[in-house]
Length: 86
Image (tube, rainbow, N blue to C red; front, side):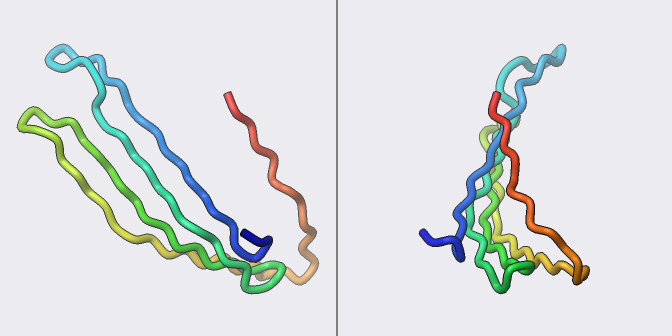
């Protein structure tokens, strides 16, 4: 990969503690890539996947997501992202 193409992956889950249900309620995942159009503008192409644990069985949902980031300010200043893992 180059600086013009940035891969990404994000996910999460929810554990439920209800009176009638205890356990993994759902999982959400998204994977994709962002393309640099210029120094201030990006185009992101992602795919979303959701898995739900329902009483009748497991249910899947998914679909593509397109994100266009446009910086309208002319005096913008680049700042690297800070990532915190825990």
